Length: 236
Image 1 (tube, rainbow, N blue to C red):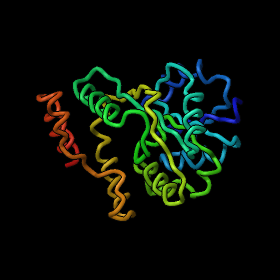
Image 2 (tube, helix red, strand yellow):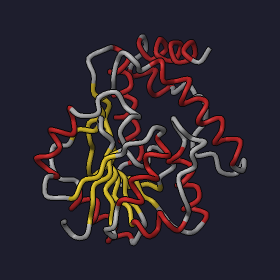
Image 3 (cartoon, one colour):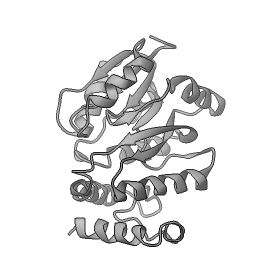
Image 4 (cartoon, rainbow, N blue to C red):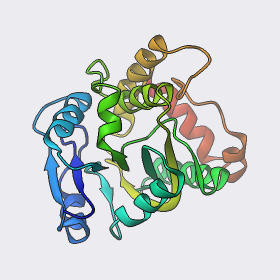
């Protein structure tokens, strides 16, 4: 166990649960690694948090591919800013046209926010947290069985004065299942609807449907509008 850190990977919430994990073993083989056995992403994260005993936990979704051990960089940012968690940036990977649009949206997000920013969403795909600080805010809420569980926890952490940063010093590859990509949007939409119903209007970390981004339109004037139309249709 390096620097008192364990790796936590929830299974069952993604569609490529082992391919990336086998690749990641060459970078994380020296860590204690826990995987979940229960259904529902919030329940899975709660199970993993109870399994862990180390002061630091590296959350790593099963569809995230690594090119190196992310711990040293994430830990360095955590120490530098004295925060409770640090999340890596991510870049969608895939050959289909809509995944290329999603990848360009990720690139634009990375460019806009530069080095670090306070996390508001996508806070656990590849992220280092102080386990004690996560426990301070209570369990992941099982009502968010598909999406929104990370936003809910981050909101409670911010309310408790526990900051989580997003750092683009690391960009990990997010391998999306192209066959189920659009089908999951309804689940995400419902998760964010439940999230919106539980939070104050002053703090909305994620909206149910993202606004039309004119910077993306300038980059991909044909494919981006088609993507937004497909996104809208998938929610009907």
